Length: 454
Image (cartoon, rainbow, N blue to C red; front, side):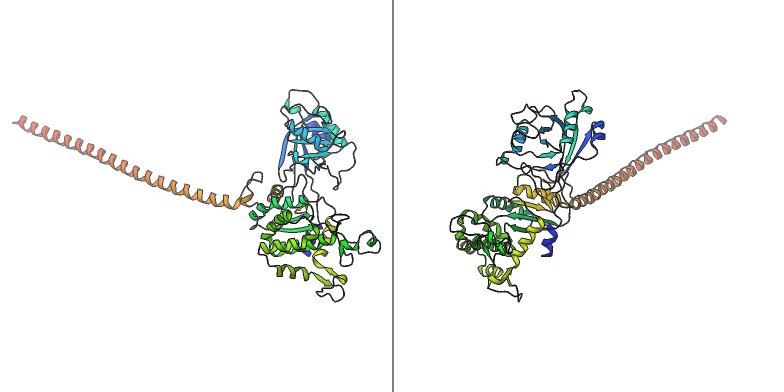
C-alpha cells in the first residue's frame, strides 16, 4: 500500500517545454520558456524533441483545408469555429509535424486543462500543443513577417519531457465494461513481455467510488455496491438486470489475476473482452476463462476471500456487510490521490500520458523514462546510447587495435633488421673487394720496382 501511495501522491503534469531559438529579438521578448499544454489526441513523442520553423495558418482557424507546407514544420492556429481535432488534422494533411493552437484568453494553463478528442482523434498522428493568447499573438506577429533571411524566421524547440528514474512505475486506469480499456491492454501485452526483465512496476486502477456516508448514500442503489455502499460502480445497463456489484466483483477478480498470474493476465483480458459481454454473467464467464487458461481458481478465490476484513476484529471475514476490502481500499486511495483521469489512461513515473493512448505509446514513454534505457528501447529513445554495451565494445576495439599495432611494429622491426643486415653484408663485401684490389695493386707495384732495380 505504501508503494502504491508513493506512485500517485506526487502525480506531476509535465507538459513539456517550448523554447524560441530565433530571432534573437523574439527570444528577448518571450523569455527562455513558453508554457504549454498537450492535446489528448495524436501521438505525443514523449522523451523526444522537435525543432522547426513556424508558419501562420491560412485561414487562421484552420477549419478548412490548408495549403501544403513550404519549408516550415510547425503551424500556428487560432482557437474557435471548429474542434481541436479538425484543426490539427488539417495541419497534418498539409504536411506539418506540429500544431500550435492559441487560446482566446491568458488564463493559466492548469494541469487539468485538456484539448479534448471529438471522437475522431484516431485520424490524427501529429502532436499538438496549446499556449496562451499573449504568447500566441507575439509568435503570430513575428511569423507573418515577410523576408528571405532564414535567421529572421521564427524557429522553435519543443521538448516533451518525462520523469527519468532507475525504477519505472506505471499506473493503468481502466474500466471493466469499457472496450477501449481492453484495446490498450491488448496492444500493450507484447511490450509487457519485452519489459519483463526490466525494473518496471505496474498498478491497475479501476473506476469505482464510495457512498458510505450519510450525505451520499441515497444517491446510489445498494445493488450497485458491496460492503454497505463502501465500494460502488456505475450501473452497467441502466434498467437491465446487471448491477454495479457485478463490476465490483470482476474488479477484484482481475486484480487478483494480475497479482498472481501477471503473464496470463493479458490472455485473460483478451478472452474476457470477446467472450464476456453481459455483466450479469461476468462471474460464470470469467470462471470458465480461468479454467481454460489453467489458472488456479482456488488461488484466485483465496485472494478474493482474504481481501475482506472485519472492521471490528480486523480479521478475514465472509460477512461483507460489516467488512472493508483491502483491494478496493487501495483502489479508492489511488483514485483519491491521483484525481480524475480519462478512461483508459496511463501514468508513467507520475507523468500523465497525453495524446492518443496506445500500447506502443506507453512502451515509448516507459523506455524514455529510464535513466539508462535497456537495449530493447533503442528504437524508441532519441539518440539511444547503451553505455554498458558501448563500453565493452570500446574495450575490445582498443584491444584489437593495440594487438594490430604490436604486430605491425614487430613485422617492421624484422624487415628493418633484414634490410640492415643485407646492406651491411653488401657494404662489407665491397669494402673487402676494394681492399683486396688495393693490396694486389700494391704488391704488383712492389714487384715491378724490384725488377726495375736490376
